[in-house]
Image (cartoon, rainbow, N blue to C red; front, side, top):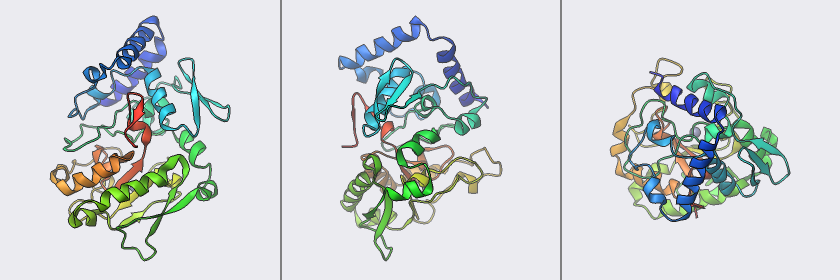
Length: 308
Ligand SMILES: [Zn+2]
C-alpha cells in the first residue's frame, strides 16, 4: 500500500546518497538528447497517470531548470547541481537532502525537488489516477510565500481584479495575484472559455473563491488560495467532488469519481485552463474537482512553456 511512498523516498534517497558520476552522466545524457530534438523519444506516454511512469527519467538539474524557466521574475539561475539562485541574491537548496518518512511527510515538508517529482499530465481524456498520484499537490511552502507574499497583507498588496467574463457575481470580478503573470494568465483562460459553447461556459460561470488566507482543511499547510493563485468553481450537479468529504480517513482518498472523466464539456474547460498554466485538482487521487491552480512550472517542456 505504500508503493508511492517508497518510490518517492527511494528516489530522494537515491539522489541524496549517491551524487555520483552515474547520476551526472545520466543527467548529461538526457540533456544532450533533449538538446538534439529527440526528446519525444524519452517522454512518458501521455496516458500514464501513475507515479511509476512519472518520477523516473528526470535529472535533478532538469527539474530545477524548469523552475527557473517558469518563474523568471524571481529565479536567476542554478549554481552547481543543487542551489537555486534568486534574483535578490538569496539561495535555496533544490534537494533539501531530508529523507521523508512517507507520502504525508513529503506533503508536509516538501522540498523543491519533491515539488517537481511528479509530472502533471496535461490533456484530455485522462485516466483515473492511481493511489497517491496527485500531480501538483506537492508544494514547497516557503517557495510560494517568497514569491506571492509572506503574510495575508503582503499577498493582498499584489492582488488584482480580473474580470471573469462568465461570472454571475454582481461585481463580475475576482481577485488574483498579479505576481508571475498569474492574473494575466487567468484573463487568457477567460478568453479561451468564452470561445466554448454556452453549455461548457456555464460550468465555470459560478466562481466560489479565489484568494483566501487559510490552511488546507485538516492540515497546517497553507492552501494555494492563500497566495491568490487558485480558483474554485461550483460545477454542475454530480461533478463536484472533494476527497475529504467522501472519505472516512484523514489521509486516504475516497473512491475516485471516474464518471467526471466522461464529461466532454468538463474536458474542454480543463484544457482551457491547462493551456495557460493551470492545473486541475480533478487529476489528483486526492481529488478536488472544483479547484484550478496556476502552476506554470508543471507545464515547462523542452526549454519553453506551453503557457504562451
Ligand atoms: Zn481550491
